[in-house]
Image (cartoon, rainbow, N blue to C red; front, side):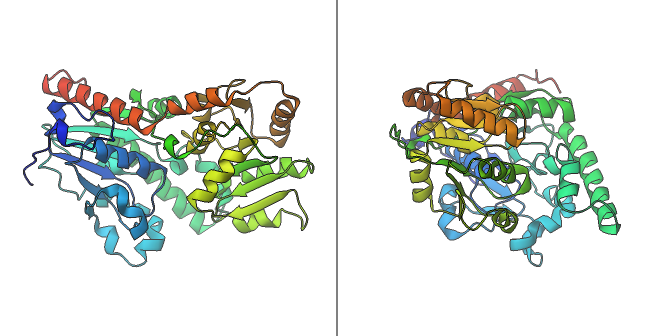
Amino acid sequence: MHEHTHSLSSLPVSSAPPAPLNTARLDVALVHDWLPVYAGAERVLEQMIHVFPQADIFSLIDFLPDRQRGFLQGKSVNTSLIQNLPFAASRYRYYLPLAPYAVEQFDLRGYDLVISSSYVVAKGVLTTANQLHVSYIHSPIRYAWDLYFQYLYEAGLRRGLKNFLVRLILHYLRMYDVSTANRVDVFLANSKYVARRIWKTYRRKAKVIYPPVDTSRFELTPDKDDYYLTTSRLVPYKKIDLIIEAFLDMPDKQLLIIGDGPDRARLEAMLPKHSNISLLGYQPPEALQHYMEHAKAFVFAAEEDFGIAPVEAQACGTPVIALGKGGTAETVIHGETGILFPEQSKEALQHAIELFEKGTFTFEPERLRIQAERFSAERFQLEFALAIEEAWTTFCSSELNI
């Protein structure tokens, strides 16, 4: 371990108020599941680093492209044995059965405070009674719990030896996931929806701290063009196929789809040669920003743990038409910043679009922007720092209820 000389005044001026003095000088370990790309969970890790610039970082793998490494602020990453296994860069998920063992090999004895950023196994790190372990849960392992049967169905694993092996592995992961809940002193959740799932899965209460959204890079744009937009990774649970089906029945309405992923070929096959739907694939951040700012409405049909894209749309003054379940129901206000539909069906989505087209609700761009700012990076830093400070104070007073 190295000596830490960080003080409140040494933190970046652009960040929100940093961790109070009691925790600003601690030896801190930040444990993250995977680092293959810079995505939603990595945005949370980025803000954690802002709050604790003295922290050391641990991750099962680190294959971040050079162009995406800036958020680590020059820090090196301590990786696990999976890092050096064959094809780990592209097939790291195939080593999921090894992940529980691998994460337990991180030697964290020299740290006062361990913070895990977990959606797979990070919360399973080993700590002692003299260390505080706070776990920020993005989600209990979705394909082992909520999406278990959907995952098996969509992967074509309904029978045979492979089906048996996958079910056995996921059964083992469920037992591991529940047992490691006892290794966490304090749980934080990224939404009320996830907090309910934490209670259902682990029978532990969690404080909600919504993840950070970079609202500052989006411009409030009152003047809109005549197209609807959706953007996400193209995987089955995002329900892009449902959105396509709905818009194919409404040929007078234009839909743009931005994103890439394993489901792309199947989705492209759904589109006629001449269609009102354009699948644009991956777009650079500048292009995505332009499309988001000028869309008449943003469409979202997934049941997400939180959902960053709908918040980004609101930051542009773009109304959101979204499924009223999961984290989106907490970020979109029905009738004020968007329209929430009750179920994942094309009929429900079409009805919501009909309400939007009729002008049933009036959406003020400034109101949408105000709502989006509730989820800013600065707000996350402040709430996260205060939550850690409270947990540390309680831990030091020997009043922690575990």
